Length: 213
Picture 1 (cartoon, one colour):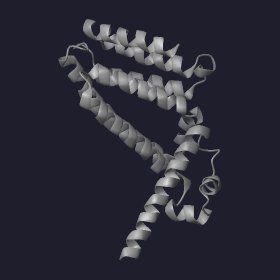
Picture 2 (cartoon, helix red, strand yellow; picture 1 turned 90 degrees about the vertical axis):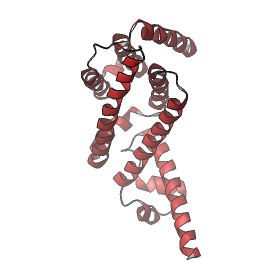
Picture 3 (cartoon, helix red, strand yellow; picture 1 turned 90 degrees about the horizontal axis):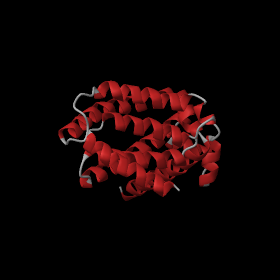
Picture 4 (tube, one colour; picture 1 turned 135 degrees about the horizontal axis):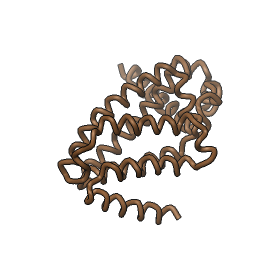
């Protein structure tokens, strides 16, 4: 019994080490260029051992994406616990997403679509989050932060299409990824904000750009 528990703990530890290593590699270099052989070698384990924990590359990628999503959800919970209104939450999430984009090779987002199981999982999660976001924005209306004449479902779809465009076109060859992403998000938030919300947003943007210098 104790031996089984020990073996289970070691396997769990190894699984976590593999995910940590793969997340870093996929994030830095993209998915396609990283092989299972390279991941095994960087951990000092055999490829056979790696495949005993993760049956194939897509299964490992799925675990990596889940790790990222879990970190995002934990961060969101921490913000919700201390934020004074929904705009504060959104702006903190914006800063978090900027940090994530900076740390992630654009190839990662392009190549992940080639893994149908992972793409489907991300779409399901995105649809669930979109439904929750609509209620979240409606709460912002009740707080006097956002306008009450906005169809947030339509706006959410439009922003999603713009972000997909950002990921799937060559626009970033002319403009930096950050500049385009900022333009999308700040224009969206300005358009749905009340006078009070707009003032809070402009205060954030001034401080944000001051800190970027």
